[in-house]
Image (cartoon, rainbow, N blue to C red; front, side, top):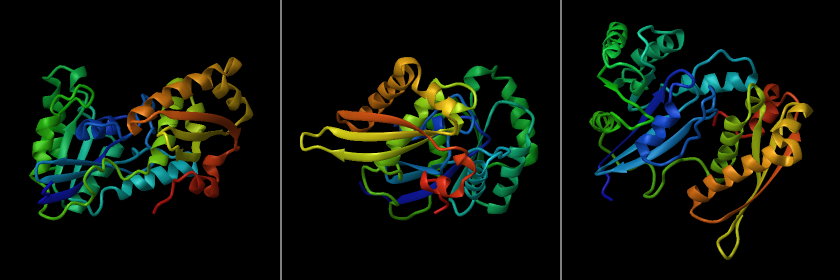
Length: 297
């Protein structure tokens, strides 16, 4: 593929606005985990799309929120640093005509950056189209956007139009990622994130936010089968029992769903083994946070 233009475009916004869903919709493949719970994304994730003579590198980030743990502090720092040294920014918002504190902070950072910026209004499948006019007016008064694009990341409506806008921002230059790459995340990390997504989807309240996932073995046999050993850490012994479930039913359900997604991503059969351990208050332990891959490098 003859790449002539390439660039990095950040997707920023508050938690649960649909950044990861949009990332997956833009590249046409699941590279970021998605759940209905806020603060699903903990790390900066790059997703890569080669299209025509252009390579897009989309940066999915944690949402700005009020941190209550050291892990939360790390996530907020990653979100703030995402609006720097990029070729363009998308501020993803819900169709609400009131600008909140997270959006105000991102708009201030966008103004300081000076790169092209688009206001992307998500979830338009859930509101009357007339409602969008007041949203556009509110955000239009706050900043002079290079583009305003209403979309539904869930249904794909408006995504093609958004790509057309973003393509016009890309500077000339060689591709940043090799052909075939869809993300900067190592396969081992993606396997861990797939398990964490199932925890978020299946467990209630605060429990899944207190879990971390470590892949202790990731190898491929001569016949192509992938062996994946995973340890799920939670913060309390009582949470361990909930993760495992009666007779191991919950852990089996989570493992089955994760294995199916792993096989779809890897294009190979996966033999998955899962264990659950307790690591108390790991979200406030700097060494544990770093050990689970949440580092600023």
